[in-house]
Image 1: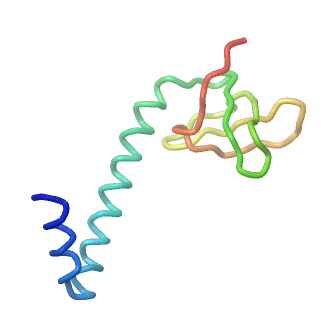
Image 2: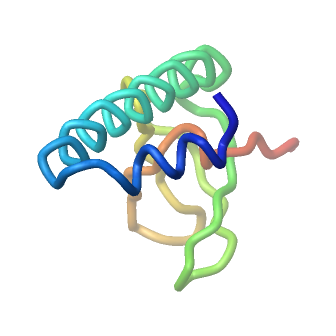
Length: 95
């Protein structure tokens, strides 16, 4: 189906149908994120040096303390803080 046709169909939907469509789309997006994160999870191990960006703190570098299903706990270098970061936002840092 062409995008324009899909948009016409969506605009013609009732509020109930839109809510149902939203429910399905959110489920699909969550599943895609789980698949993406699970494939990334095999790349990272505790002790790996990684970096990620924070909107307020800029780029942060630290070591992985624990790898979970979708996130990893990162101990920030030169700090006592730990962050719970989505795996898809992490990049390995070469030593």
